[in-house]
Picture 1 (cartoon, helix red, strand yellow):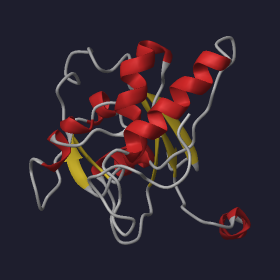
Picture 2 (cartoon, helix red, strand yellow):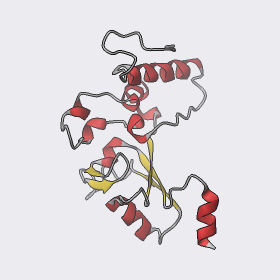
Picture 3 (cartoon, helix red, strand yellow):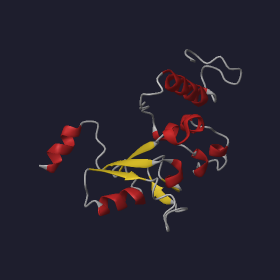
Picture 4 (cartoon, one colour):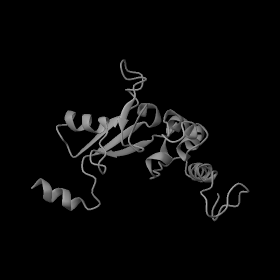
Length: 169
């Protein structure tokens, strides 16, 4: 299990290490091997949990995500279908509103929370290679059904949920 500062030869301590996501995945794989009968939840930013980041494009550099491997991709390579990658998104994300988030709000009649399992949609007629605009990893149009296994939608992004409850009164 890796721990402590980066000791690779490709970065210095002021930069992010390119090997860090792989090392994080190795740590997760180590834990899984130690407790194989248990379920493990790893909470991370959406970007780090992506199963296939190559399905998205970075606006400033279209090849960036093809040359990068996220922690989620490494864990998926090790665990396969035992891994479920869940992204979180919100209707209100600053000034940005994705089409997917607006559609979820419309379908759920503006419900405060929703869950969508992408796995059955991946191969469904009309969805399989669809791109959707979303705020999941910065606002952009991507094949989200292949990047994550599901999405958890939170209408109002608030650090203090009591503010949301006050608004609904």
